[in-house]
Image 1 (cartoon, rainbow, N blue to C red):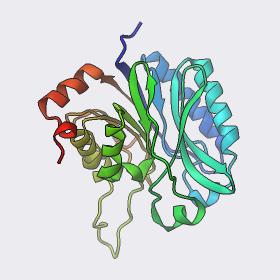
Image 2: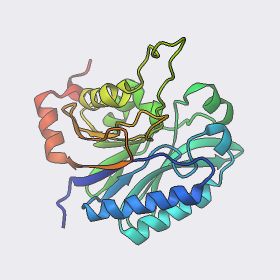
Image 3: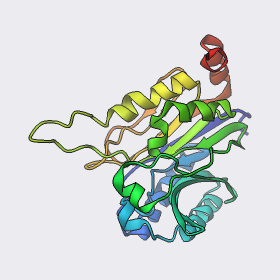
Length: 263
């Protein structure tokens, strides 16, 4: 049995096909089995993966039905799963992330607070509540979605609330050239630089699951409290696996405890 405070995390990097939930669920199931075979206790999947990432096209998707299927998969495979779906609630639509434990119980659901761009804002409502921290194998886990983690205040608040691992389903696209020149903002900097920086400055592990190319930045990763991308993908479809350890977290906080020393 794994010791408390240790969690092996698998991060799925793939691209959901818009409008083909059956195919996307089959992809999740295939990688779930691979994650279990590699000893993972938690699988983190990209933003709106089962729907495919296209906010305008999927805003009316049956997120409740998708969550039922994901819960059943977690239960049958015996592994926890983080997945992002559309959540329609009280006449509003949210981009959500859910954490299902190995029995298929939905431990928490979070609504994306920082919507990205005009399309997401046209079809969805920003979440109004902070992520909850829930225990999983002795590790405090919280959820964010994509753009959330690009705000240092968000990650710091999550860490101060007791989270040790922040799971972030994401969909960071590559920006096309403008006037024949590369876009001034290379979005690969988000998984490559921003995410490990957030992990360092807030002394937390971050599991960041992005879609693959050709339209997305890829580079999914698990970053640790020292700011290292301890497990990282490239641009192909793949499963990235790494370990979360409370012992390492405590060591990082002893070395430079930004949380305790903040002004």
